[in-house]
Image (cartoon, rainbow, N blue to C red; front, side, top):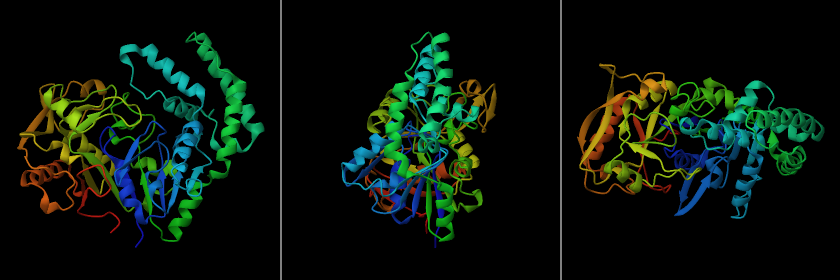
Length: 430
């Protein structure tokens, strides 16, 4: 029986979505990216070989199935072509399987420039963006001045639109940021070269998805970043510029919301965050450093060190509710091996009150003090285990308590980075 499932992050991103998408995509007809851009970083390990992806769906290492980039994704043509070429040199047939929506907004050099100038101007108040122009590209989309992938199919239309938009940006750069203007001729020439490479891949993604559904073939939707970075529901303004939650699937791909059968929330066994913003359970001590070192907590895209802390059940429960999660996949359980005591945040102290719903404002969340439950750790290794019965009893109790606090069953447990290092309790496609 065919099923359409979504794989989403339930925290601040970096939960391990790429591995799980790769794991579950063996029998799907298509994997779809529906938001974000090349600020996302998904690391896959197959038979010990590491692959890092940013735009191309994580199923590209499989032998079959379409890899689709939906209209909700903002696309840097230069970054996409670089990623394609890296895979092609390894003998992976990218062009035969990759399709790009004709409605994707293009990220152009002026977007990255604006991102950089803004972060410099903010100083210590900087949001901590990846500096890749993601936010400014989404701004152009909302302002209805964006250049889209369909514009690559007409040199005349592309030239007219680029001239108009770049005039606006160069005025901003010169008058407000006292920066040098960008060259129209250079950007146009580069974009036309990108168009030659990508034009055959640009198509109508909603039509493909509808046809697959009519043929009763399974589709998997791959989220980027995490729920707590959603522009509407995350820790605003320390968020990304797109909707990372399940609601973004329909608008970002053109696939009707009633067609989804299962939504899997990828959830790290502790909590990490990259960049600025509130983090109630952050650990600035030896335990935090232990998690960082053992978990290899460095951003796939940025190379920045991730902040680490205890599991925050308040925030993950919110993610369960926002996404109507069917089940959880707990990743990096093995990182907790060897700790004497584990802590789970089950509530916050906020203005002399005990609360279990996170406040809307980032400023208020930063004032929240975690209320912890303590559970005993385990000494034996869980790394690479493939069967639930092999887990230490205290690990089972820890997982059971997480599930109870957040209100969602655990379907999958990841015990290592490789595709095979996984315990599957309930396959979403079964």
